[in-house]
Length: 161
Image (cartoon, rainbow, N blue to C red; front, side):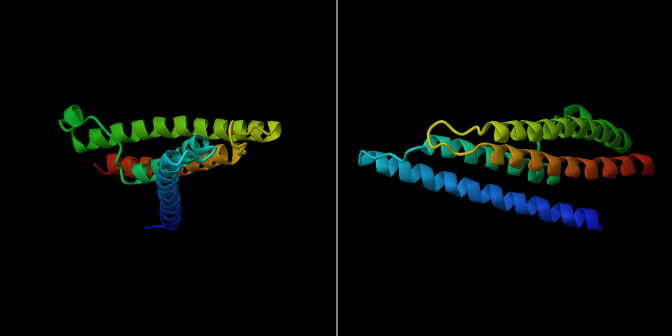
């Protein structure tokens, strides 16, 4: 495993940890809100906070899921292809995904900058939203690095065969 792969693996694990902590926070916040509602005193802004934490969970999970190749795929036709053809198809789909998520990451970064400049906040608790959007952009950037690694691996397989 090269240096790029080690750093990437560390980043993916860090994001996985952050996403896991956000998921635990959602669980605790939701539970506390339900209990407090029973006593007639719900937590103000719980819906805002859960929504923003859900964004963190989803964005942080994407690089890890890609690293583990855990995304859903249609294997009915692909299984009938040769290993070289499968590698070529995987390289093409990973390249298209890389381009798409690079564009999304870039646009999310720009959008977060706009939100920061405008001082955009959540509706109930007035939490600044741009740090969450910057985090999504960074997560998609890490996802792009994982996709780049996979493209290189698939091209290597296709060339070997």
